[in-house]
Length: 300
Ligand SMILES: N[C@@H](CCC(=O)N[C@@H](CS)C(=O)NCC(=O)O)C(=O)O
View 1 (cartoon, rainbow, N blue to C red):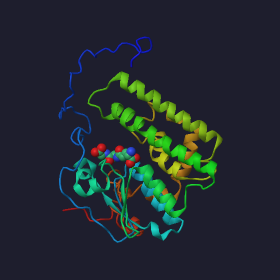
View 2 (view 1 turned 120 degrees about the vertical axis):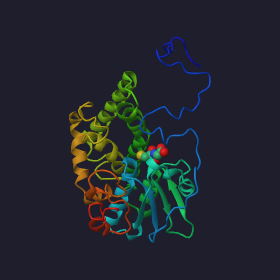
View 3 (view 1 turned 90 degrees about the vertical axis):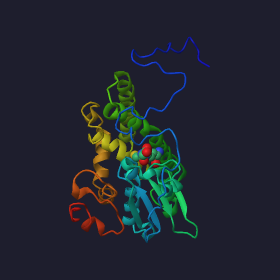
View 4 (view 1 turned 30 degrees about the horizontal axis):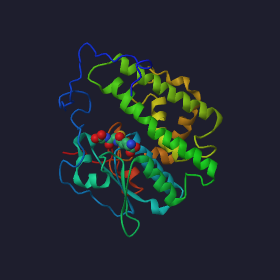
C-alpha cells in the first residue's frame, strides 16, 4: 500500500493523462514501434534451419547476441570441438523472432536462442545468461568451480542480467529511440547507468576481471554492454555520460577487445556496420576469412 508520508503525489504531464484502461496504440512512434506488441506467441509459421553442428544458434549481433558468440569462439579457441556451431541470422527488425520455430526455442521471442543437439534429445536454452551457464557447465570452462570464485562469477553475471535492461530499455530507449526527449526519463536512467559504471569501475579497481583473477562468463556477459558503452559505441552517448572517467572499465574493456575469440565473436550474425565486420551466418571456422559481407558477391 502507498504511504502518503513517503511517496510524493503523482501528477500527470501537461500532455498525457493515463486512461482508466491502457490500450495498445500501434502508432506510438519510436524506433521499435513496428515490432513491439503487448502479446506473446508466434505471428506466422516458419521452421528454423538446422545445420550440421551439435549447437544451433539463432541470433543477431546485438550486445545480448555477442555474449554467446564470444563464448562459443572462446570454447573453440580452447580446443572444445563439441562447441562447433551453426549461427543463423534472426532479423528482429523484420519479425523473425515471432516465427513459430523461433518461438518454440524461445517463448519470449528474443535473441539469442540455442538448440543443443549434441545429445539424444535436443535441449532448448533461452536467455543469454542461461545459455552462458549451460555452455560453461557443459564444457567445464569459464566458470570457476572453487565456491567463492564461482559465487562471485555468477553474482556478476546476474548483476548484468538485472542491470542491462536499465541501460538498454531505460537509458538507451529514452536517449536514442523515443520519438521525443523526456528530460525526467533521461535524467533518471543516465543517473542509474552512471551509477552502474561506477559499480563496475570500483570492482575492476580491485580485481583484474569481474569474477576475480580469471576471465569468465561474467566478463563475456558484461563486456558487450558496458564495454560498448565505455567506448561510445552504444546510443552515441560516450560524451553525454563522460565514459572516459571510468578508467578501470576502460582498462578491462580494452584488454577483452584484444582477445582473438572476441574479435571473431562480435562479427557473427552482425548485419550492420562495416561490410568486412559482418558475418551474417557462421557455419565453419573458415567463414571469417571467406564469407564476410565485403567478400560475398553483392545481391543483384
Ligand atoms: N534477457 C534477454 C534479453 C534478450 C533481448 O532483449 N533481445 C533483443 C535484442 S538485444 C530482442 O531479441 N528483441 C526483439 C524484440 O523485442 O522483439 C537475454 O539476455 O537473452
